[in-house]
Length: 309
Image 1 (cartoon, helix red, strand yellow):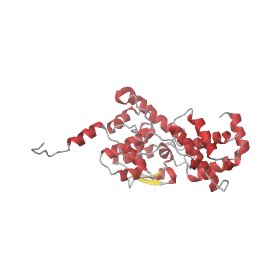
Image 2 (cartoon, one colour; image 1 turned 90 degrees about the vertical axis):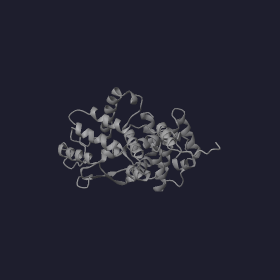
Image 3 (cartoon, one colour; image 1 turned 120 degrees about the vertical axis):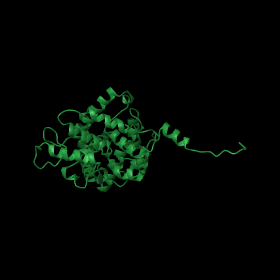
Image 4 (cartoon, one colour; image 1 turned 60 degrees about the horizontal axis):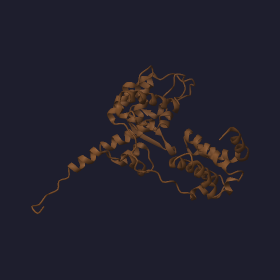
């Protein structure tokens, strides 16, 4: 969408956009999700060609999604649909609409059995040696919080000083859906976080409570956290051919954490709580098994043969 088109939407639908923005903030959507959903809603509103949203129907939503599907896959289409569904939920909540036509549209089928990309535990440990520089301790702590505690990048970004309780060895994480989650920490990570708190740069604003502070004295941004991880992944790939073709990211460290726990026999319900999932179905995507596990499982099967065979 170009600037003129965006300006046109702003002129016609500013009240709806304001209502949706307010609703998302009130509902605890992350900044990244708010930006993505607003981008989708702007494009959707422009596609209505002047029709007010509350009068739009199922066909309007489908036309919008079909235009998106021509240049993107099913997952992207489903994200667009989720944005439009949320938009109408907001309008209904503010009594600006009475129905949600996007709820009448089915999501596209996606590949449910696709294995999540993840690093083995030894590969996570190996990654740490590529984290160097002046802020090495801080960056190692960030990497470990994602790889050994399963934190989302946004949760690392939102972590405040008072969220860490060194006496109890826990952190309180503010996650999706405005939910708090208490996570016990490995002893070595407690020690690292204590050290980070002592080394912490004096914030630019005295009231800034961010646990991780940039060299400019501001809360370390999501983009900066992603850069720290991506630089580490790049170095790991150069030295480790087995991961060179993997699409690694901060979220893949979360996948790695979940997979590591399940491989160690941790109950999937416990993994669900540690990850802060609202549904165990979401956690179940990490219960994938590899060929070696299948081979070992079948090797343990003892068939009692009889003389008749």
